Length: 212
Image (cartoon, rainbow, N blue to C red; front, side, top):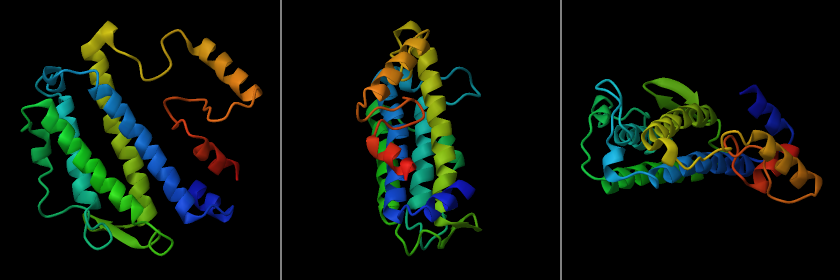
């Protein structure tokens, strides 16, 4: 939070900060999308053991949280009376298509909510289970929550695919090569480069924001 306040003092406008949030979340969504593209219907429902969640169940929880938290988020508590959080951990999907449809529904709700953030409401109070949060804190809370679960999705998929997994990050034993490549790009002034394919969206706009 201290960093965010300092950024605002440096003159970054609300719209630009909102754009940063959107790009960051779009990146983490893309990790999920690229993971699902490597999986069969059956693999979406695979569980390591009885106590583990399948990818389908994790998606059900993420999207269920999004729909609850971000529907009418400025006027209603984020823990809706119609939400059944416990039920999110019980699979009710039968096909990969159903899982992906619910995934998209959750993200659509969330991104629509982000678009409603403006100068007037960024620091207004919103509630989650009766606990007051500034709107910006509610967003930051999910910036920790959603990537946490997306990381689980990626890890499960890597276990399933094993040697057939197409990495979403720097390939194993290729870190030095990647570092050298990135340094050369920056030295040559190539636009749109980014030093981490995992932690940052490959977008020049994000890097420009932090230069101000």
